[in-house]
View 1 (tube, one colour):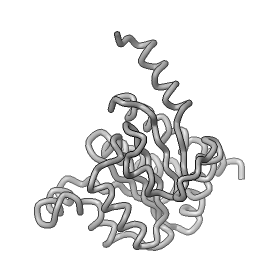
View 2 (cartoon, one colour; view 1 turned 120 degrees about the horizontal axis):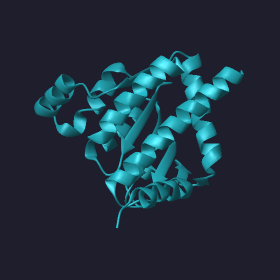
View 3 (cartoon, rainbow, N blue to C red; view 1 turned 45 degrees about the vertical axis):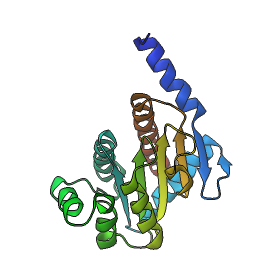
Length: 192
């Protein structure tokens, strides 16, 4: 039976069990991985590069939220590719798999970062965005959950995986992780 205490306990447990790997599949310490993410973010800010956020459904809303917070609070260029007109035009005229890849081809340059948020880690439009980003010379950070062998989890320079089997727990864990990263980044920037 679900109640508030059991639900929040589950989120805490998933966050504590979060697994982080690099592109080679090597496991990384959680704190060290978040610190690496902050270092990469500082490089983006210092070089006036851009961080792109993509996701579907609730993850799209998180992408928008974090792109706004990153620009407003973090002081660096960030953008979420989930404008309804752009997404539906690309999906209709090209393919849904291209809804993030095509804008990346138009906007991204080497030194930028792509951050993907996918609860299942198995969305074809997310794969295409990652492949496009890599071809363009971008670093990639992935957030995923559900099955441990999901495809996104093996594709990024940093891969944050939430070992949970329900969308609500994965999404809530992703949101906590995203805010933790940005707050840690702001703390590091303010100390330097």
